[in-house]
Image (tube, rainbow, N blue to C red; front, side, top):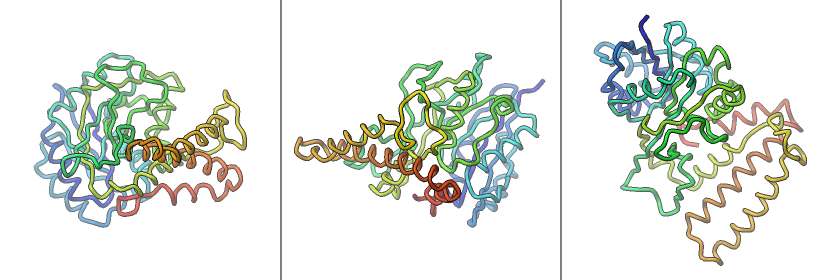
Amino acid sequence: MSQAIAVIICTWNRAAVLAESLASLARVRPPVGTLVEVLVVDNNSKDDTQATLKALQGGWPLGRLHALSEPRQGKQFALNTGIARARELGCNWLAFSDDDIVFPPDWLEQADAALSPGEVMLIGGRTELLWPNGGPPAWYHDTMSAVVGGIDLGPQRLQPPPPTYAPAGANLVARAELFERVGGFAETHFRHMDFEFGQRCLERGEVVAYEPRLVVTAPVEAAILTHRYFRRWSFKAGISPWQQMDTRVRHFAWVPLWLYRQLAQDALQWMVAPLRGDSAAARFARELRLYRAWGTISSRWMSRLRPAAYPAWVERRSQKRLNVY
């Protein structure tokens, strides 16, 4: 029986960036004896995305290139559309990435090797950052890498990974049967649906791993290197409804007590940072912790006190505008 892999990429109004990403994907080598189905899911693009895909399909060198559409706005819907099509095509495993990623030629070979231990169901890799203008801004701190899509847990394979880890959607590989057992991406999550999916897999006892040899590169857009973007991202990263309360810890007003303590400590440390001579990067990193904590607190209160309005509240704060928060 032949092995088949689906590469699923969701896109929205980034035709030029998508074309560059697919140009690097076209140079990727398939594992020996493996069929490749590249599924690009267009999530309501108004630009030249469809024309770009049509132009690439004729001479596409890596298996087959499929242009799919998902009319419901939201990456979680587009991801599940890609999963459904991959299962229709009989793919054995599914690789997920983003529409701006640069792929090394051995990406699929490394994915195949990473999944070779039969018990592994879900694996995430390393995402390196490609900075504009030669490097990050002076106010950037290494703890902010997730904001711009960077993932690096070190040089060793981690199986199991840390309990708070979940493979990021830019570099994630899963066996097809995993989606039969745990379901697809949660369609109530407009942001960080990959984290929720990974945590759900861990909670259900699935074998998850981190493999640093599975690596891609994420170019960082100059337009997002603003304090506003980082603050809004951090607030959204904290959003979680009251139903996600951890019953193993004490809560007050649907928020864990430790988060109130952390918020107070971070606020104090942020205020005294100039007096201590902390760097701008260290002070801004502390500020982002405040935004993330407030995202959790406000979403817990909103979901409990105004449950009917909560879904729209989350969607308004989660959808991108012109691909910039």
